[in-house]
Image 1 (cartoon, protein in one colour):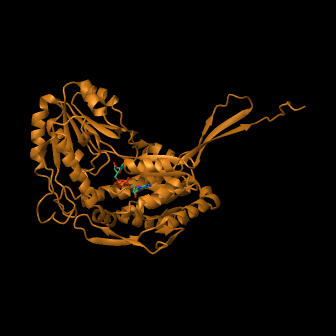
Image 2 (cartoon, helix red, strand yellow):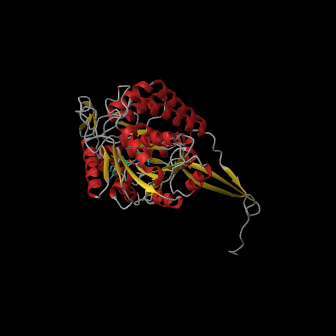
Image 3 (tube, rainbow, N blue to C red):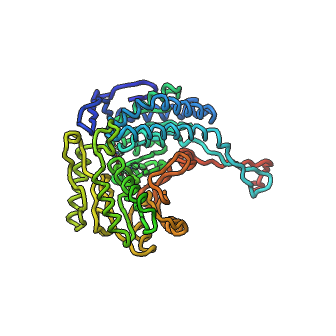
Length: 485
Ligand code: NAD
């Protein structure tokens, strides 16, 4: 762990084995922190914020540091990508792309660090002036998941550093390796001791403390609904600011006038990319009835060709699930789907073969004959499971797409652009793609409507989350009120 500029073991000396999900090898042994460790990190971050020079640093100085971190990530991107693939099983191609995107996130927020000069507003009161400034929130607790370990961390680290906060980051206990490595790079870039602190260990202990502790001013969480609810509840103690990036059950709406070949191809990528372990996975295909049968036939034909295997092999298209526990969840959802009467069209089992025998692999799976009353359609399986529903009219497509407690992302496929825009305007989601899926970039905000979360990351909205807004009013001609004789 990294606290106050020092690399340290857990106070109680405990450690945890980190497992490669491709073959279950132990690839690292890292500190397993306790509540005492995280409390120490919080105190350091508090003191650094309250008493140190960091708060007095200029946006230009912080921006240079954040851009320097981007450069170091670019320098070490191969090593970082290899660590991510070892730790998560995702393909090396994907991990390399993640590292490029992560460097861009740091570069983007480094560039924004000195752009906010505040705002002069017109005061309605004579002989006065008013300005509005943004200030750092203070001590930030940052909690990240296992599916995109460093990508999710970068969305939190870069804006928090750029705006002059201090922070404690806690990656998922099972995928800490790239967050450890990037903390080394943050140290190398010259970020002062105590500004960025890294703790490692379980969410229920360390994460919960970050959400509860009164010395933390903001908690930013990315993960599932259940833990998100605990974080939000714990945060009420001192009413700290809360930012939540939660799950999704994202609709992919295909009209009959879509480019058939591209829509099939992208529907597969939407759901099976990273074995479905993506918050924005297009897990609910909603397809116009007139093309339903041919669309499904083609999906099944192409699904048979998806190559599962070692993320380090260039021919591999998808890696394993993250853990035995998660594999058990996915297996359970297939049973739920069958019990609910959905038709298992392909997949539904663990794959056979030498290359995949030791990993937590699961076959790409498609259920047809689905309807929105089913749990398999409503709940986030976070695995390679696609459900297919049919629609007959445009209003029905919109109604089905919005029929979810979630509202993270969704897509509309049609060559009729006015129709596609009309439909996308009515979808209640933080991101809507027209004739595309999964595209995101640092410049545009990311986040969810409804139970998919609170607040936004990325874009200029993502940096605003890390600031408090202050109104400074000046009376330029102070005079006694004359009320008191
Ligand atoms: P998770 O909720 O189990 O864990 C996320 C993080 O929270 C981990 O670091 C974990 O240790 C910690 N945690 C667990 N219990 C906690 C508690 N009581 N208090 C504080 N912290 C706690 O999620 P996961 O299984 O790691 O990740 C998968 C989930 O993340 C999915 O639901 C996915 O949709 C979501 N996700 C969302 C986005 C997004 O941008 N909206 C991005 C990636 C992942």
